[in-house]
Image (cartoon, rainbow, N blue to C red):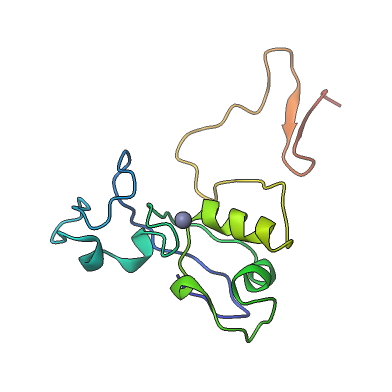
Amino acid sequence: MSTEPDGSMISGARGIEDGQENPAPATTGLAGSTTRAAADPESWCHRCGGPNRSWHVPSPLWNAVMRGGSINGEEEYSGIVCPTCFMVLAEERGVGEAWRLDARVVHVELELTTPSGRVWDAEADLWREPA
Ligand SMILES: [Zn+2]
């Protein structure tokens, strides 16, 4: 994960295969890799050891949770944690709660109108009656 204090963080795009619980050290399924240690270090959470995916939060929120609240603070867990660990840490430290998950890349066409005609308002994060 790139963790420049003033930039966005994006963790590794590759992940350990679905269905593996806490696979350390195990086969990752990545060509040429036979152990977690040999795999992309961003493909596993350095707090819980579970699989990690490509994700990010706004940098100021990351810094508040992972750098002890300081933009220049030392980053914990090598700066690589899974979303669940990030949420747990943020809640334990009183930084934030009530999470929202979204995808920047969606590979299918999403249904944005309900059978009754209500339309998804992405900005409000609600279904709305048509105008
Ligand atoms: Zn984790």
